[in-house]
Image 1 (cartoon, rainbow, N blue to C red):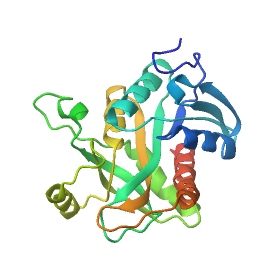
Image 2: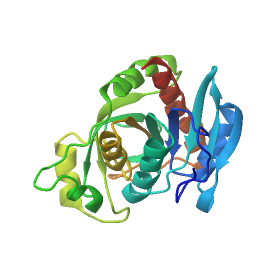
Image 3: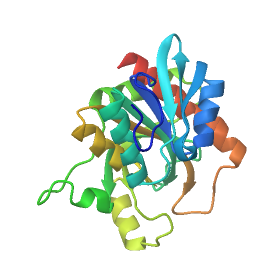
Image 4: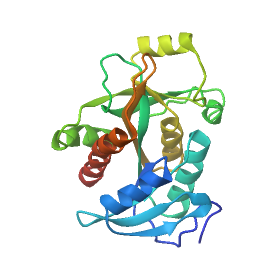
Length: 237
């Protein structure tokens, strides 16, 4: 039956879900990548579709922004709709100087300052990591996506988009953190709790250390690299 945030009927979602933050990106994936896609939920304008890719059932649904939002949708998909794997597809701010605009980052860990995760397991620092098989399959699949430059490593999931924290940023860079975003840690934690699988794949859209960013058109074009890597990883893992 429908949940408080998802209006789909039982069986409406495929076991594999791509999860961009923006509902418009969910629609774009449904219309240009999936075949026979149909709208299955639209509560609060958060759109979800189910179709096929190379004959395999795949769904795509937006998550909104931030750990609390993606945690709600991922929990309801895993717990009530028999979804088993979610791959976040999004953008991130590059933190390492060897990165270029449009590069793809596969998040093999997610540090976070999120209040949602701070007390997840009282008395213990919880480590946010993806499903190893999905991460390995995604890195291998990148070789089949022309033009994709791919990096694997840790990201920083922040609760604050506009906070200026130069000391924290400097420390994260020194410890090898590739990029900053706002959802991966929440998705990884929910997948662990629900005994499911998750991965975050992000395109570098701007940087923390210089004023450079992709145009809207470039974001959409390079966003496709992450989508294609995710679909290939889900098919192979």
